[in-house]
Image (spheres, chains in turn brown, purple):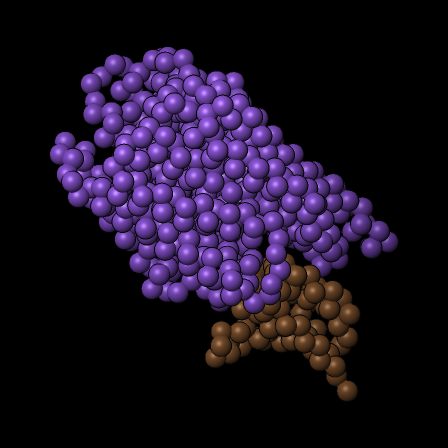
Length: 73
Length: 433
C-alpha cells in the first residue's frame, strides 16, 4: 500500500521546510506520496522537482495554505 | 501568508555580498571619528564630527547595506529584473564607498574640493542606480504594498540624493543656498522617505516569513507609505522660503506614523506562531523600541520649547534613529539574509544530491549574540554621551568595536559559503562513482 508522508512547514522558519522536503524526497519510494503544507509557493523546491523527475500537484486551500502533493514521475 | 519568492531570478551571490561585507566598516569609521574627536563631536548636529560620523553611517553603513539588499530583494521578492546586476554592482559598490569616505573627509576638513568630488560621484552613482533599479521596479508584474513601498523608497533615495548633492555642491562652490531648510528636507527624505520606507517594504515581506508572525494588516501596510510621502511633501514646503508654524505639527505627524509602524511590528512579533527568539528578532525589537522612543522624544521636544531648542535634542534624536533604529534593523536583517542566501545558493549548486549544511552553521549564534550584547552596551553609551559628553570617546570605541564584530561575523558567513561551495564538486563526483 503506497505511503503518505506529510510535512507541515507552515510554522517552520525558512529554509527548514525545504530542508525537510529534500530529506523526505531522498527516501520517497515509487508510488509513495509526499504532502507539503506551506503558506507560500516554494519556487526553489519546484526547480529541484523539475530537474529530478518528480511530478506534483498544488492546491491552495481556503486558509491560504498551499498543499503540494509530490510523487515520482 | 507572505508573497511568493521567485528565486530563479536571484543575482549572483557576489552582487549583494560585496555591499554587505563593506557596510560595517563604515560603522567602525563613524565610531572612531567620535572616539578621536571626543566631546567636541557632539556639541551640536552641525559640528564637523557629528556630520562626518552621521554621514559615515547613513552613506556608508546604511546606503551600502540597503543598496546591496535591494539588488537581491527586487528580483527575488518583487519579481523585477535588474539589468546586468554584476556590472551595476561593480560600478556602484566601489564608487559609493569612495564617495562616502570623501564626504566624511570633507566635513572633517571643511575641504571645498572634497565636497565637490563627493557630490559628483554620488550624483553619477546614485543616478545610475536609481534609473536601473527603478526600471526593474516599474516593469515587474508584481503587486502589493511591498512593491509600492519599494518604489516609493527608491523615489525617496532620488530626492535625498538630489538634495544632498545640491548641499555638497553648494558647500564646495561657496554658493548662497538656504542650507538649513535644504538640510531639514534632505534629512527627512533620507530617514523617512528612503530608509524607513525601505525597512517598511522589506518588513512586510520578511517579518511574517522569518519571524512567523501574522501579516501586517492590509490597511496599515498600504496607508503608511502613502501617508509618509504626503507628510514629506508638506515638510518640503519650507524650500519655497516660507517656514510656517504648522510644519512642527507635520514633523510630529511624520514621526507618529513611524511609531505606528514600530508598534504594529512589535504587536505582530508578540503574536508569532512559534516563540523562537533569535538575534534577528532581538535586533528588530531594539530598533522598534528605539523608534518609539524617538517618537516620544519628538513629541516632548515639540511641546517643551526649552528642551526642543537645546542643541542636544537633535543629537539625541539622531542617536536613537541612526545607531538605534537603522543600525539595529540592518544588522538583524543581515544576520538572517546572509545565512539564508548561503543556504539557497548552495542548495542550487548541489541540487538534490548534496544537501547544504544547516543554516544555523553559517554564522554561529553565539557570535551574533555576543555582538548584539556589545551593540546594546554601545548604544546605551552613545545615548548617555548626549547629556554626558565625557562619555563620547568610550562610546565611540564601543560602537566601533561592535561594528567591527558585525564585519567579522559577516565575513565568517561568506567564508562558510566558499568552504561548502568548494566541497560540492568532490561530493557530486563521489556520488556518481
